[in-house]
Length: 540
Image (cartoon, rainbow, N blue to C red):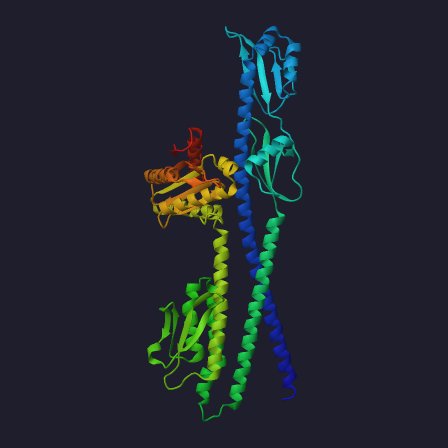
């Protein structure tokens, strides 16, 4: 016996070390998974922000070039310019260009006078009445830091994000500093210049690290509390076994229904359920059944707001119930009523066991709720409450695959609020946010329960309509357009204004893949913008 004691102590120590290592490993895995989820969510948000800013900046660039074209037309119609070109008077052209640092005059023989050749420019050809060419007037838009600042202001870039212009992979303007996540598009049609939007990666990494740190310590704390409670129950069970007499209860029954064994079974049940699901509703039946098994009760009921949610066993045949609360803090799930055998009320140890089980079940429910909240946050737009770009991509691929396999139709509606930048400029971003939220409410009021309404990024939205053809998608888009036209918004100064939107609609099986469905709907939306906005266009 003396020699067995050190061996048993070493065995207990080894078991404790193995348990601690397993707990540490579980905390690390949970923290890593939560960090990856947060990193993916932050990355999707950054990509959506960059894509939206690039669209706004390229629209501003088109406005800049349209202004250059208008200035070139005005200059070309000036009598002084016409005379100088007609006479090929280079000195006069040089004087005319001196007052305009972006203007270049080109004679038919190729001689230039004025500003250096600017890559982004618009031209007007000057001709005589009979059609002979006198020369060309060019007005350019210099690609410099000032242009980048104007594009940044037009796009409303947040602090930290940056614009730069590149050619063939090399930056023409100042490159962003540090590690960045970048996205690019052509600065203007017909040039080899790209506009690059960049977002720093440090905030994404910091957010992921913060989530990992919080989850790591939360898991360790939960496991530590569970271990402490288990140790306390084991001590109580051992003390009880020392004072229990053989005549009080048969030894076989005691071994079969001892609190420690029932506690182990209850913990195993709750642990297996928590590992199998993060759905709080799926955990509740397991918790109620575990309470019956752990305490030897005849039945149990979970009651919330006066109504029964879950039951196990035969509560009606039991005695007065023991009531314990489920939930943590303000998140009260309900009261767990545990019914003992009518001839044997719960003793003190069984009461403690019931309260401990309720505490562990509350922690499991809270963890499941937090997991669901993190998952929901990763697929939901914070401002509008609609689904975000990530969930849209997953759902679009899934619905197209389902339609391809089982037949049926699928409509996609893309929407873009018209002149939304002007709303922000005139009334401020708070009013702009109110407009976005109101449009999201109109979308929710217009769609069915199984449709998916999405904020795709910025002022762009999408609606995925399963089992809906092109005509159905057009009808919904028209309803939504009418509802937005009828809505009225108020500025901080009390001014009332209206907002409109352009829509593009595409449908499966007119196109046969998720990529083509998105592309054709986007082209239809572009046509709606180009043809005057405030309209619904179906895809070709």
